[in-house]
Amino acid sequence: MRQNIKKKNKLIILGSGNSLGVPTIIGDWGKCAVNNKNRRTRCSLYVKLSGIKFLIDTSPDLFQQVLKNKIKKIDKVFYTHIHSDQTNGITDLETFYLKQKKTIDIYGEKRVINYLLKKLSYLFFTKDNNFSKILKPKIIKNKIFFKIKNKEILIEPIEILHGNLKAFGYKFSNIAYLSDCSFIPEKSLKKLLNLNLLIIDCLQFKKHKCHLNFNEALNYIKIIRPKKTILTNMSKEIDYFKLKKKLLSKKYKNYNIFVGYDGKKILF
Image (cartoon, rainbow, N blue to C red; front, side, top):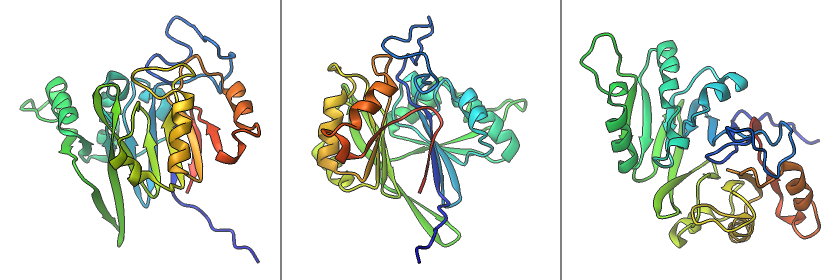
């Protein structure tokens, strides 16, 4: 008899769009049909893993993303790089601090942490009694281990390139998230082989100097061979339904690739 094993861990793709979103601020849907599956806010990911609840990036749309997905608690935040579409929602973390009454740990490579400290020092350090230190900066270089109820949790930064900018993807529980990526070095590729789930950048069909296009993402999928892949960071050039149909064709069906969308939940 087959047992129904309840999965307790969860991730939510809070935002699946590129830096301009879909539609853009001037209402341009591009090649996308006007539909909620194509309505994309800027990239951010929520993860509940063995009792730890964390974000990867805080997009400018974080306020609405959190409300829509009824997220009540955030313990930690991991940043991929310094760009505004990944960091500008950071001030919304104050609400979680006020509710939890606990400083929130912020992780990123040295450049990211220094950028945030310079830009928003009052969130980290203050001599004014009217303000609280709501965030605690932590520079990440290697694997990070957390212990929760005798369970050891590993979160590993994966070095990638976003154009000429060094950025991080993150790997946890045999899942990898690579939202802004144009190139994966060989050393990093070796860490990604045979994943259970890969969430990867797929900006458009045409070539772009700072992001993977569809064919480039597919080439990495063929090398990494994950059991399942979800495409994210998509622009107004990619229509959800047309790409979904394409991926169901005989040519791509065996790769088990899915089109991401805002609010997509995965249990693991």
